[in-house]
Length: 204
Ligand SMILES: Cc1cc2nc3c(=O)[nH]c(=O)nc-3n(C[C@H](O)[C@H](O)[C@H](O)COP(=O)(O)O)c2cc1C
Image (cartoon, rainbow, N blue to C red):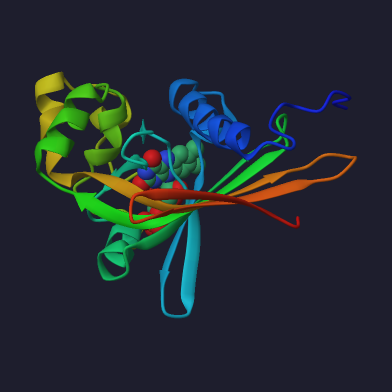
């Protein structure tokens, strides 16, 4: 149990710094809990959540992003309703973040070109299926050929996956923070409105 109160316990500015700190380590450290948030999106009365990998954090532009398959259901949903939420929880830090924002699907543009160049040969595997994700299959299958399953493809051969690759940016509108502490939880709400930042406490 943490005995000493962290510096963000009663300080909204420190809360704000801690948020971006956690996002940054989620981006850089594969084992950090913030590396794999849950993305929630939906239409009208249907909502669903799924894990994605945090692939980018931009403190200045207040946006974060992840990679996906342009053929996926979540992309279809986001095209209709670009509002989405990303849910993070770090058990050791006892911090939950609920980030809400408007998404932009980048496809075959400068953003995707830059991100695709940075992907590893191995991570391109998930974009090499002929049939799109989520479609029915008559048998148990990864949707990939045996060679692709076995990672037997060259960098040149992996280029074909670019046609299925997209980068989903989330332009943040609000961040809700919850810090669990035995001697009193803390909850804060941060909003970005017309380029101005507002931070306030809420009752947890
Ligand atoms: C650890 C982990 C990481 C994942 N990372 C991603 C990701 O970065 N992008 C993505 O589209 N799907 C990712 N997935 C798969 C999604 O959770 C989901 O199953 C898939 O994208 C289909 O979702 P959809 O039908 O809502 O489009 C990941 C799954 C796990 C378990």
